[in-house]
Amino acid sequence: MLLPFFTWCEATWLGQLVRDSLWLFPVIEAVHLLGLCLLGGALLVVDLRLLGLGLRQQPIAVVARGARPWLVGSVVLMLATGTLLFLSEAVKCYHNPSFWVKITTLPVALVFTFAVRQRLAARDTFRTGWRSRLLATASLALWFTVAAAGRWIGFSS
Amino acid sequence: MTILSALEWLAHTPWSVALHESQYVWPFTESIHVLTLTLFVGSAVMLDLRLLGLALRDVPVSELTGRLLPWTRAGFAVMVATGVMLFYATPVTYYQSIFFRIKVVLLVVAGVNVFVFHTRTHQSVSAWDRDARPPRAARVAAIVSLVSWAGVVVSGRLIAYNWFSCDIQPQPAFINWVSSCVVGPP
Image (cartoon, rainbow over all chains, first blue to last red):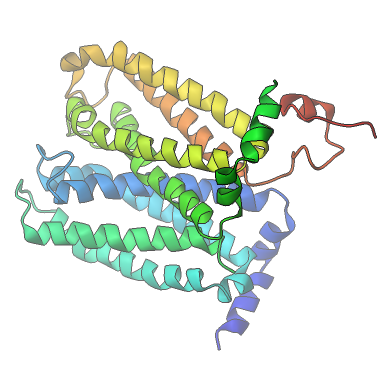
């Protein structure tokens, strides 16, 4: 049902540009990977804090506020480079189970991070109760699934 | 015995062949190697950005080096363990890969920078712990760190592309020289 849309994606000007270039895909892929490092750092520093680990001498809100611009920036970078990679091989992605795991978990992770986690991480407290630990565990599990499935796109076919 | 012949011997050891030909162990190892970047490079980048006054400005630098660096070190240990496994799976390919060689050089640069930062720059951290913008030496260390680790990640990713592979000839003489390719008579 969605296949015509994926075929259209692959036929877009941008999709063709990336696909027809020898080095564009690898370079965008490398930038996507740099974005992963940044996103991982910005997420982990806050999730560790919510677990009562890492920077635990700071209030949760201070850590979350300090990491937030880089969280937002890395998500934008990941979405931009990810879209380019997807457009260049959309039909291949359509037939790839890992892609579907990633693309369905990603919106959940995004909504969870910017709606649910955001609210709890904004509290100006040092206390990490079961709620913040649960939140951090869910955050780590969701993003781990997105990243692992993303890596596995290249292995499964 | 040359390095090449030693690595050719290594490539024929049973465990190397098993890793190389495995359906799941190799991709799992590779995935752990990539995903641990978030822990290792991710946490190092947060410290670098703090040293540049670009992130976590309200957090003292010593708290990052004291409480975040253990996570960086743990990540590094996983990176090395999985990296050694990946190298062991196809040692000759890595040895003759120009991107792997670039990666090794950048690893040395990054390592020297870590050493200099911790043995010299960081010694005086109590004097600038809460500064939103730490002193010049710390900012320089942060920039060298960001650039060298980013280079390690990018060149590591590009190892997978065989544009300059010794097996695909002819290559420019410079590439064959840099990659130590053994080129037979045409």
